[in-house]
Image (tube, rainbow over all chains, first blue to last red):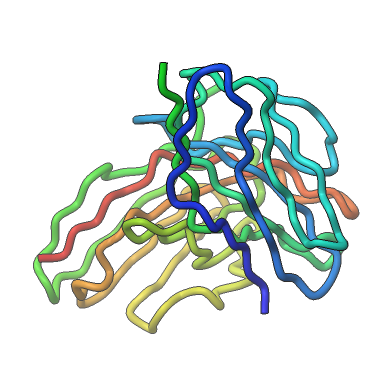
Length: 112
Length: 117
C-alpha cells in the first residue's frame, strides 16, 4: 500500500531549539519525496524535494531508503517556522503522472 | 504572473444540492490535479488532467463527483446531490507536467471550503 505517515500531529519547540519532523513512507517502487508547508492563511507550497538536495530556509531532509524515512530537520527553529508541514510522495519515472500522496501533517509551533 | 486561483472560496450547500467548483491554473501548465482535504487530514488525490484529457479519476469517491477541463485550461469539479461527508476543502494544483523521470512542482490554489448542511 502507498502511504505516508507523520506520527506527530503537533510539535512544540522553543525558538533556537533543534526541530525534527518525522515522516515515514510505504511505496512499492521508486518514489520521490517532498515536504510541503502551509503558513497561516496562506496556500500550500513546496518547501523541498529530495532530488534537489537543497537547504531551504535552513531546513534539510535526507531520504533514508533503508528506514523508508524522510525526516525534516532544522538546527535552530525560528518563530516564523510555525506552520503546518506535510510530507508527500509521488511515483517517479515516465509512467508517473505525479499525483501526490500526503501524510496527515504536523503542526509546528515555535515559542519565543 | 498570477498563481492558481479557485472560486468560490467558500460554499455552503444544503444536502442534496449540486455544486460546481472552479479552478484557473497557471497559464501554460498542462497538468492539473484536484485534491480533497477533510478537516485534520492531509490532501487526498481526486483526479488528474493532462491538458483536456482526464487521465486518472481513481480518487473520485463516488459517481456523484465529476470533473472536466474542456479546453485544457480552466477546470470544474462538480458534485451532485451533496452529502455531509462531502464537506471539505477542495484544492486544485497545476504544474508543467513531467519530463522523463522529472516531475515539475505543483502549485496549489487557495482552495474552496465546502460546507454541506
